[in-house]
Amino acid sequence: MALKAIKPTAAKHSRAKISIFGPPGVGKTWGAMGFPGVYYVCTEPGNQLPQYMKRLEDHGGVYFGPDEGANDPAEVLNQIRELSLGGHGFKTLVIDSVSKLWGSILTAEQERLGDKDAFGASKKPAVAFMRSLISVCDRVDMNTILVHHQAAQWSNGEQVGFCSDGWPKTDYELNLALQITQVGPQRLASPTKSREEGFKAGEPFDWCYEEFSKRFGKTRLEAVVEAYEYATAEQVQLLKALIENFGVPAETRGTWLKKLGVEKFEDADSIKIAKLIKHISK
Image (cartoon, rainbow, N blue to C red; front, side, top):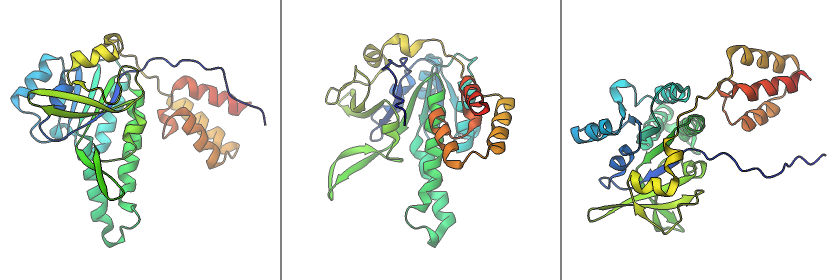
């Protein structure tokens, strides 16, 4: 078998992809609304209070709440896909909270399964949604803040701290996870996981856009949003025809999807799909 490793190449700096968690009332929402051009997906009651709406408006943001479909997981994914197409002035996507979406999917499946819920079966739809959410957030060229409730973190039967609730792998999929706390009037963000150079565990900072941008870089946060070029319907149709004609096994198709970083071929990048079609055609 030939070795396939390539020369190390630095990846292009991406937008901020953040998971934040903390107890109620510490300023998770307030801090997130201070980011530039927020497209605010609100799943929680109470976050449309006048002071929140004014802060959102003052920072060039808009509101997408329950009446617009924020509690429908499929509609939330559709909205992010539309944002990934570009042609708008928004720079930051905030989902507040992901915990509400995760919990609603989980509860609905538990009720549907009833006594048949065993070995974590009720978690499958919720996990599938989270995988799709992370995937579409990767494709949108916007800063992304996923807000979570706080849960106790346990080890060997003892509480060792706090973490975000919901899908345990969320923090691993993103580049930065922050615990938001409040000490007197000061709101602090403490990195609990980081792939970003400006953020280190044990070094909290003020939870506000001004302090965050000093560490992350305003240029990265406020750059013009680039559109994601989805594969065309013709490309997907041709690809599926080739797969069927050549009898490509499911394992190989799965490997291709993983390399493309998508759950389905329709969500793949047009240029990458073109290369795959060329590869199969040969």
